[in-house]
Amino acid sequence: MHNRYRLYIRYPVVALLVALLVACATLGPYKEPPRVSLASIQPKEMGLLEQRYGLQLRILNPNDTAIPLKGLSYSLEINGREFAYGVSRQSVTIPAYGEALLDVDVVSNLLNVLQQVQQMGGEKRSSLKYRLSGKMNLASRVGSLPFDYSGELNYLPADAAVP
Image (cartoon, rainbow, N blue to C red; front, side, top):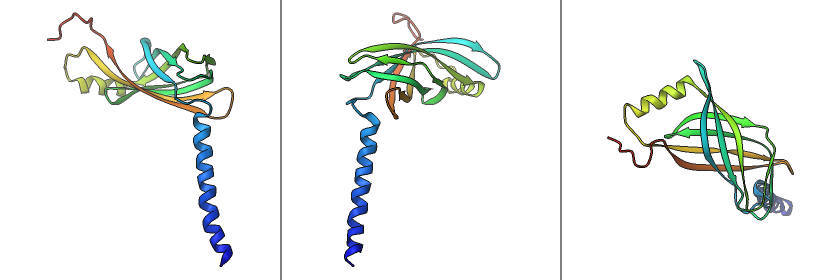
């Protein structure tokens, strides 16, 4: 009977330690996740079934430790719908309390574009809401840093009236 009680105590303690290790391994020396925002988007290749866009991402590091990246994966939502996705093997080090611009590609398909056009349904808008999310793989150790940023793309001049 005594051994049984030891097992009941041992397993929750081990589970708690594993959970703490996983939580620490996620951000490690980084107190805050990096902020990744969309600096620009440009069409690159327009095929019938697939489209490729060039994105410029601004990566801000709010930590006192540099973040060495060896790659990232990401997706772009527009107006609450997935629009495009991509991966990059670019290596870059974001300095402590610094930033970096990273040029990457995303791929969209005809269905995503048609859904966006259908959702707009002839509405005239001066901006689109977007969400950029994904994870950064670290060069210095096993693990990744998640990111999730929402913003708005204004595509009409501020002084232009929307009827």
